[in-house]
Image 1 (tube, rainbow, N blue to C red):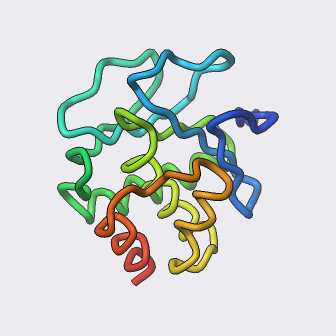
Image 2: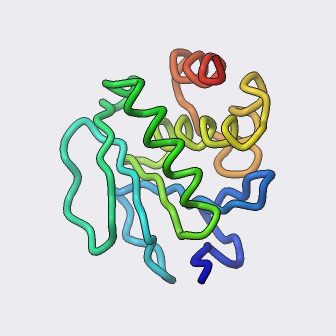
Image 3: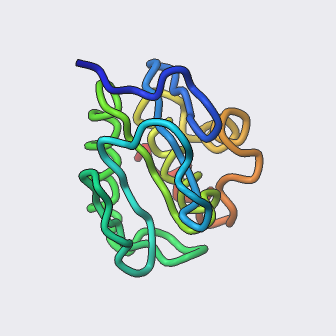
Length: 143
């Protein structure tokens, strides 16, 4: 059975393949509707426990992932799972780290790396991917 975010609502990014991935800020209340099946939490410190399966990717605010090889593996797993499950990415505010991760998923989904930030800003949040080094990380993600 497929457990995706249907229909795509606020905070849900539709990738070109049709995969749906929710992005959100953990400072805000959990959105109404179904819970994710899998969550990826992008924080400098361990996130709170969830009722669903989750991964913590150590990623300080306004920075880049602490372990880039681990980040690539986590993004790949999340992208695969998003084909049939409700997957969410979240950081404290839901823009910088979350937007950067969503842009990397867009690259995995076939968006050229030099257009992935623009894609996420257009389809998820116009202020996603907050720093120059986050934008550079996405541009180099395909390589």
